[in-house]
Length: 253
Length: 244
Image 1 (cartoon, rainbow over the protein chains, first blue to last red):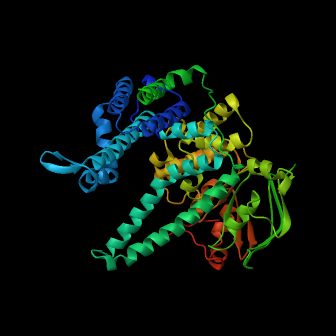
Image 2 (cartoon, rainbow over the protein chains, first blue to last red):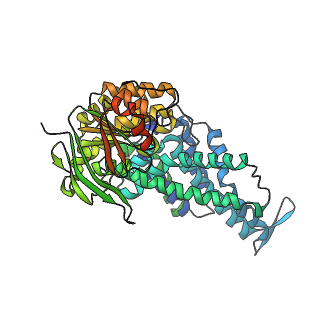
Image 3 (tube, each protein chain N blue to C red):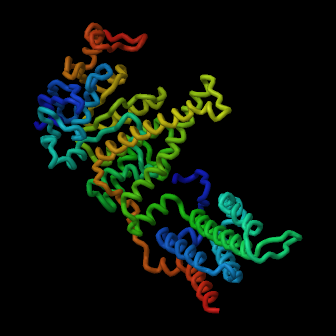
């Protein structure tokens, strides 16, 4: 959003990757994820190739490897299952570092782990090189229904306002000695959440009136009126094309 | 001359049957600055909501610079009546200041260089042009209030309606906003509990209570009438006295 403030996912820059039109990046990222998902799990070379393409994109974008490594941690809860599968899977077993593991389970676990990781890395790459504002503009340009774009825009704007309100309510609670330690003491917190919901609902009504008062007719005006040249598609889709070629080769071989 | 705002016999009851306005008559000439005073629940905000057609009158009529507030005219009415709401977080809903200021004029069909010019003029008028690409989240409260004024100015309204403009402002921000508002040279209707602010900004005041206008005259005269104020649950802050 605003310039000069740090963001969790977006890393401001002016690389060729940053300059690719956002709608192209969205389409490219989606195509890349589909390629990854469609690759047979035993095509280890293809997965390596995907990673190499991503690393190439990162180096062009000037975003360091550790930026992605730190943020990819988010997938850990989702891949716990993948780590368990080799041990709980059935079928033929083999020895790995002295532990008996299931071959079928190992492949299933690998499948989840590698596709999940690559999917997260593709998304992080897009998020690191595209500001939230541009992402919304991209969705708008891709003709995503305006209602969704409007909801996403307002959510982006108000999530921090509501978090701040929740923080103030929490401080007001603990200032009066509320100190929940056990599950049955969370009643006040739960009622606080209810109050927050009603307050946010009322805010929604006030925002709506404010929007109507300035001529709102149901569609956010597209303020960024620059139309991208047809050439942007070519540059933006190069990594996605690399993924597609890799997939085609691995399926054909 | 056509009045900037004409309200005749405006009455309104909320859907639950509570009568909020009992027949309000008000005429504001172009260039006037008028304060709307009155206790909580007097009907001030309800009246404001009628001026741009958010609430539809039960009886009576309203015209803004000659154009009646009717369903067919709503869009133009909302351009002519610029409402600045009390909480700037309700008013600033776009990701950046510039986009928020663009929201109104873009809805009213302004595009291209005219739109860019409208944004620049409006932000310049409130001294906030340097914050154009910032998120409203990262502005101080006083800055947000001024940007909220700019979002309305960009629509080039006939009348600027402000709901509690000085609420929650630190003293310096309050004074700076007053200077900005005085520099705009616009017809203005200002709902406020801040009586010294009304005195500073508005030569004329109306006092609303119980859904009717109970006094209409020079602000100085109304604020000097201690008995009148007391009857309607109003009083000057400690240490203030107006000699008349």
